[in-house]
Length: 223
Image 1 (spheres, one colour):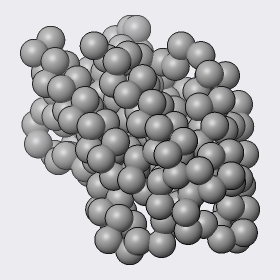
Image 2 (cartoon, rainbow, N blue to C red):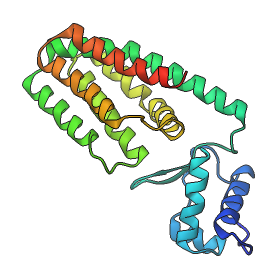
Image 3 (cartoon, rainbow, N blue to C red):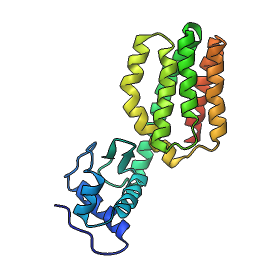
Image 4 (cartoon, rainbow, N blue to C red):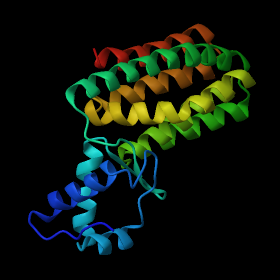
């Protein structure tokens, strides 16, 4: 049973209570927390206080609030500085792997895409460019866009590789954007638009270069 919170500030105390419960092992890594109403009642706080506490722990990388899915445990404690360095290295490794997969897929997509593929890519780009996304939703839309490009390559091995890698990509990209928000969303959108146009124009070299350039810029932002 989680002890109810008595002292102020309530949000900070609630965050401490949640973290203590996670540290105790009651909620393992990847576990979904109870629903908001249930959890607030068990803690003896209001739902707005609980939300603030969850936001605090999400900012520290302990929890991840996913639209329509719930709140999940993504770390068992608040990361120390060394942990942050390790996570940064992990993100760089993920980006390097994305370059290997996606640059080749972009080149193949420019050669093999069908009109239906191109429509799907353009729809995904429009969804990705929506301005009201939270970080998690933005990453979901970004993954959908890049998957549409890979599907257009008509190489089932590349698609399977990407699909198996998506959970790791999602965690890494959410963590990266929390620590390093996009300096220029406009430039980021333009880079994706350039990739779409290269595929539309059936220019494999430009498509590969656009994919590689975009991902390399993300990597440099972490240097």
